[in-house]
Amino acid sequence: MTRAALLGGPRAVSHPLPQWPRIDDETLAAVVRVLKSEPLCPVGNTGIQGEFEDAFAEFHQRRFALATNGGTAALMLSVHGAGVEPGDEVICSPFSWGASVACVLQCAAIPVFADISAQTLGLDAASVRSRITPRTRAILPVHIFGAPCDMDGILDVANEHGIPVIEDVAQAAGGFYRGSRLGSLGAFSAFSLQASKNLTGGEGGILVCDDREMFERAMSHGTHPQRLIAELELPEFRRRIDSLAFNFRMHTASAAIAHTQLRHLDGWTEIRNQNAQRLYAAVRDLEYLEFPPLPNPDEGSRHGFYHVPFLYRPGVLPLDRDQFVAALEAEGAPAGSYVKTPLYLRPRLRAHDYIGRDFPWCLGEGSYTYQHGDCPVAEAICETEWQLKASFHEPLPELIDQIAEALRKVGETADEIAAASAGFAAVSRSGEAGT
Ligand SMILES: Cc1ncc(COP(=O)(O)O)c(C=O)c1O
Image 1: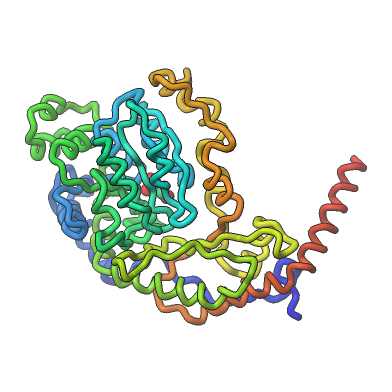
Image 2: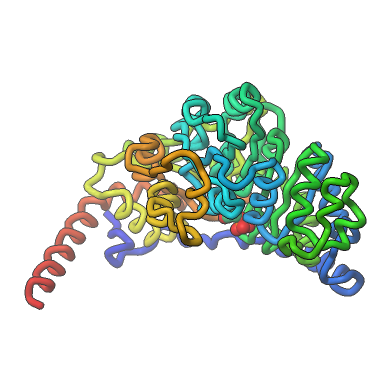
C-alpha cells in the first residue's frame, strides 16, 4: 500500500489547480481600455461601473444595483436600506463568514441567531419563526458554499410578519432556487466580488433591490454626494446629501473585471456542478463521508459551488475531522474546514465586545446571551463540515479523479496516520514533562 503523504509518501494529487481568478486576454483588454479612458474613481452610474450595475441588475431581473468596494459594504448598506435601526434585531445564520453578522453590528443592530437546516446548511425556516420578536426588523439568510437556502420557507415567515429578507449571496452567484436566480428573491441581495468568489472583480461587492425607497436609503448611506445629487429622487433622502456617508465606491478596474466575468458565470456554474457531481459520484461509497443534499435541478434549483462541501462521519476512521483534513491537504487536495465555531460562540459576541461599552446590545430590549446549545444543528455541522476550496470552473476530469483517489487513500492509510500521531503526541507529552 502507498504511504500517506502526511508521513512522507507520494502525493495523490499532482494535477495543478485551475488558475482563479481567470484573467484572460478579454479581461485584460477590458481593464486596459477603462484605465486609459475612464476616471479611476467613478462617482455615478456611468462608464464601466454603470454598464456593470445595469447588466448585473438585468441578470437578476432587478430594478436597481449599486456597486461597492466589498461584499461587507453591500451587506451593510442593505441592512441600513431595509430600514433596520439602532437596537433593532436581525435574524442571522450562525454558519457563515463573520461579515454576515458584522453588517448588522455596524448598523448598531443586534444579531439574533436562528439554527440552520442540515439539508441546506442555511437558515431553517422553523427556527427563524421561533426567533421572531416585535423587535425583529430583518432576516438575513446566507446561501453558504453556493447552496440555496429554503427561500420559500424563509419568505413565508418574513411575509407573515412583514419583515424584509436580505440575501447574503457572497458565495452563491450563479445559483438558482426554484427557477429564480439566487439574489433575485430578497428585498435586498448582497454579493461579494472578492478574488476567490464565483464572480469576481478582485475586490468589490454589489447589492440589488427593487424598491426605490429602500435603494435610495441604502445609497444615501454609502455614496459620494455627486452621485446622490444625480440619482436620488425622493426628498427624504435628497435632504440627507452631504459628505457624512461612508465611502464604499468600487474601483473602475474591479468593475471592468466583474463585467467581463458576468458573461461567463452561467457556463462556469454549470461546469462547477459537473465537477462536483463527478467527485461526489466517485466517492459516494466511502463510509466516512456524508454529502449535503444537492438542490433539485428538476425544480429549477442549482448549486453555485463556491466550495465543494462534505461532512465527515466521525467514528469510522481512527482520525478526527481535523486530522482527516490535514491528511487530505498533505495529499495535495485543497481541503479545509470553514466555520469551525458558530458565530454566536465567538468570544467577542459572547462578551458583547464589538466596539466597546456593550454597544449595540445596550440599545436593545432583550438580554441577548449567546450560549452553547442555542443552535444545535449548526454546532454539530461545525464539528463535521469540511470542503474543497478551489474554483472548479473548467472541465477537470483528471484533477477530480486524483482528488477522489486522495480521499480513498486517506481512508486506506488512516491507521498508520493515527498510529504516527499517537506517537507524536506521546513524544510531545514526555517532552513537556521534562521541561
Ligand atoms: C458569506 C459571506 N458574506 C459576506 C462576505 C464579505 O464579502 P467581502 O469579503 O467582499 O467584504 C463574505 C466574504 O468572504 C462571505 O463569504
